Length: 420
Image 1 (cartoon, rainbow, N blue to C red):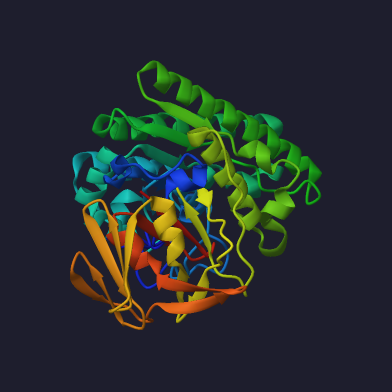
Image 2 (tube, rainbow, N blue to C red):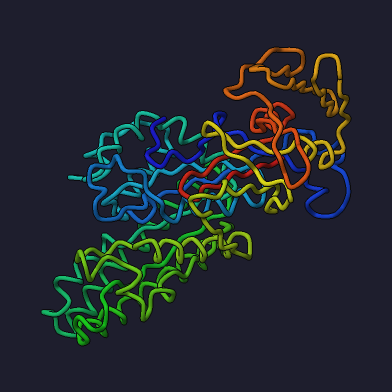
């Protein structure tokens, strides 16, 4: 399945350390039960270019975005194994969303034109080619997140100033009535496939800075408030019908920051910039998990961040980057997971036993033994001077995965997440 966002980027070329949950939480060694495969937390995102993560300069649809969905995945990985599938479509309106969810509900392919005429997003055909798979992902999702409606009301940025208050009120009422009908139908399509999923739908921020046109700004702020009221009403009605749905109130986060959180001033483009996308991600994360952790990108000369079960690795033996791989002291693995390790002086190798799984690492060897099977590594284990000590450093993504852990690398954040 084509995913422009490359959501689940499992890196085996980047080796990282394995630190057990119990060690990081201070609760002791990892229990045997933790060796069992944990169910993935599955998120499906649908909607318009806000879901896509679009910014000016991405018109070729080949540039990887870093929008709210990517940040939402990072937050999810702090809570456990995660799979995110992003089906945002640039230019999508609520009518197009309804056509898309109808196709998902029926498992029937539709053409791009049948979804919505003149969509600028060339990936729609790829999505509908995989409609059965999308249907399955929706059926299995824990969360279905939606941003929609911006393209429905964006006309007001152009026409709003020329309309009288009465005309504007009438047009907003018409647009929001259509929004309510079509969004309700779309959510019902998806809810019929998955009655247990949590739906999270965003309201719509107003992007025009006040300094640009105060009169129009005030009109659009009134329209945005009505939009939020409409989303709240739709959610309340759906909740009464048995749909688990919450509203991500993103609009209020942009008030007063329209010029610094969107591309309106420089590009006359209403899409969020990086500040805006982070604000949206924070709102969604707080709705889903009740919190948001601000993650920092390491300095260029620093090794990547490593999080294990939501806790950042803190060790005096810093990871070492070699051949685009992270290596870390083998001692951290053994102590963290309370594994058994045995040094063989004759072969100059260490054998780590963890439950039913074993990894044998030999100094200087370009292979490691995983459950007695030879696996090649780009750089052998080596001795690294740490203060006055010499520590054995090993390629640990391979070790972590083969001990049963999930390893996810987020390149924009330069961070690895490891979950049992």
